[in-house]
Length: 197
Image (cartoon, rainbow, N blue to C red; front, side, top):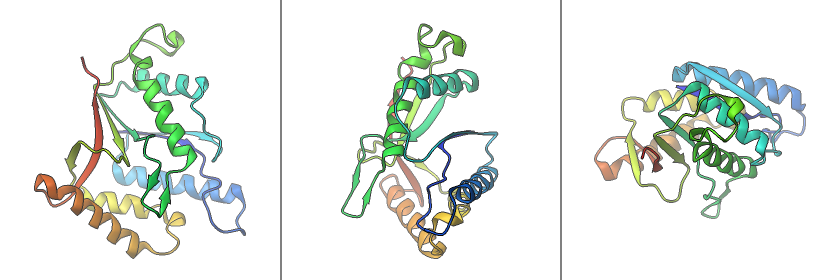
């Protein structure tokens, strides 16, 4: 598994007393810790300043280059069409823009040689999984790795507002709900696009 993170995380704090550079460094350390827990083979941090991500030509070219160099069969990213989550959460700008840029990079650009030819030979991703979707159509059984997922989430301590127990409970509860339709203890739901044709 290779992990690519678009934003630098420098604005990811509710505390008015922290400097952006301190938040950025803390978030980077948490990212590395979570990636280690997950067994990531590599971590690429693009360090785009928080709040400034756009589905730009430059970002798409970078993502195409990563897809072509890493040659993944499966790519997982945020569903950019999911904006409102009930009355309690708005999927913010950076997540939506990242999702659109990823979609455009994977389908079709990475697989077509005339898009960004300087980024290397084309590579066709077989499956694109979109997380945080309102239209899931596939559930992965994560029963064997749910504890590792929880530890990786909790590694981002600066984002938990000191309520790790509540976050842990929510992650387990949502995974139980996702797994129920397919008869497994814990699941993770995605919108799945089968791009191999």
